[in-house]
Image 1: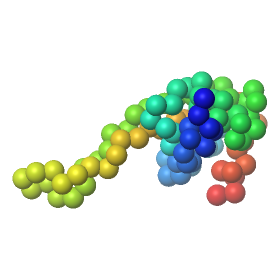
Image 2: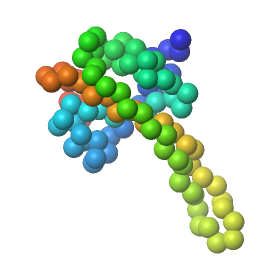
Image 3: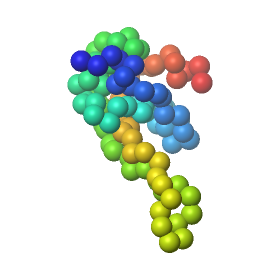
Length: 99
């Protein structure tokens, strides 16, 4: 098993994920090879959420092209994986509440 900090890389804070927090959904950038059980275990360990996680949804996000694409592609940003964790009613992640 990987360390929890190797599974959950960073919180994903955007306008859309800020709106999702109102319905107890929190978004994170996770390791591309992480599975849902690994993400659940890491979130419970890092944020002390034993029994509070209802659902985990994951998605692969393709990297966008970088630079101008006149005749060839200059490069791309790397692909990454996003996880949205749904918590039970009344549970929160304190790290997000201070932002």
